[in-house]
Image (tube, rainbow, N blue to C red; front, top):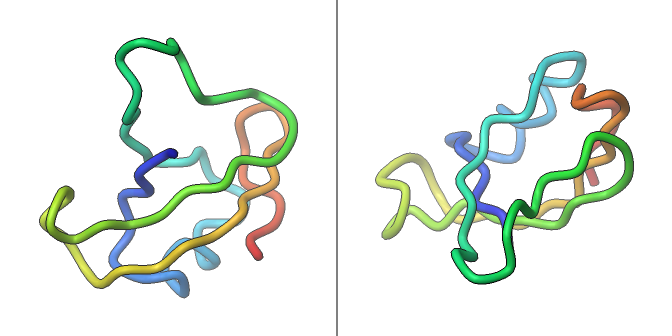
Length: 69
């Protein structure tokens, strides 16, 4: 699962049109990020040190956030 580096889901939604800020969680699988498609992830404050916990699915087009659910 991707760690999103945003304080809240609202802040992530406000970033539509920008590149996604994230941290990889899997060192064995390789790069989890994709340029086009859906990514499910979370902010886990005990791991990132920022904001509060939330989960979201982000739709990317050419590495740009297009939609957040």
